[in-house]
Amino acid sequence: MAETLPVWITVDGAEPSPALEAFLQEVSPYGVILFARHLKSPEQVRALCAALRAAGAAAPKIALDQEGGRVSRLRELGFAFPGAAELGGDPGRARALAREQGGALADLGFDVDFAPVADLGPAAPGTGLEGRCYGDDPRTVTACCAAFLEGLAAAGVAGCLKHFPGLGGSLVDSHRSLPRVSGDRTAREPHLAPFAALAAAAPYVMTAHGRYDFLAQAAPSSLNPETYLLLRALGFAGRSVTDDLNMGAVKGEGTLGERAAASLRAGADLALWVGPERETVEACAAVRAAGPDCARATGGT
Image (cartoon, rainbow, N blue to C red; front, side, top):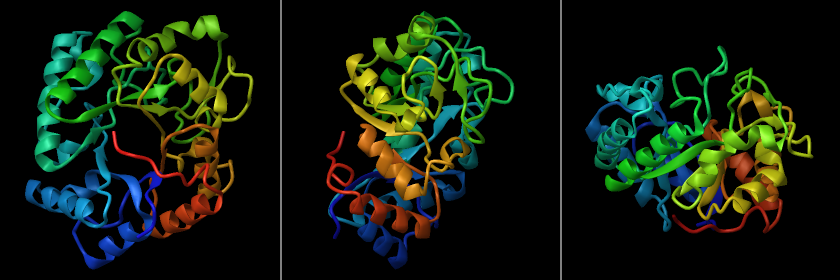
């Protein structure tokens, strides 16, 4: 089996199969992310997660985007959880919500929840952040994100702060195009504050796709070495993971394999993308071919 790659990928099907096992043995990813289309019933999800873990010598981390509100994959299984904006900036409610969601995730077989959102509101219309921010005060956002991480951890699930260095103030949806985020370092300090305060507590941090005025390089933040140097300078000791490298914001930065290699070369610990297995096999081959700096093995968190 191939050495574990520092990539987080998805799978085509929702059922265990010899083809799924062969794919995972070939790719050997650090992590697998599932989506609503993979969730048919609790029993089916448990079986799928067990098959993902058993496919190779190194069991991948299995993740879901489960914030609550508009980003709620567990809705497919009948769960109804409120989003960040509905919690009224109350850390107690955020902790209880995360504990409940974490319990459901752990029961189904998930290791990681790509939440909470640490971006500052207010979210501009059309950015995809509507309803997902805890507020526009960094102290409130920090307290709610800390509580959310604590609630997940109590349930045995790792959380992930997103989207570093902060998408607050952006005007376009990075799923479609690259946001230009204005403001010098001083102006952006409130947006960095939740990440700085929680740097030692977050197992994972997801990097945004954005072009930031306060960063010297013009490369999208997920492909920019300055992003990862800043994150470590704030005291982050966990694993950084890119936002989806197949999003519109970075589609113009070469092939998927080139984008993944560029993010790893820039300093990302893990390159994440959502795409068909065929494309993933090609991209992983490109990452391996890019050399040991990109195809380095990475341990678990």
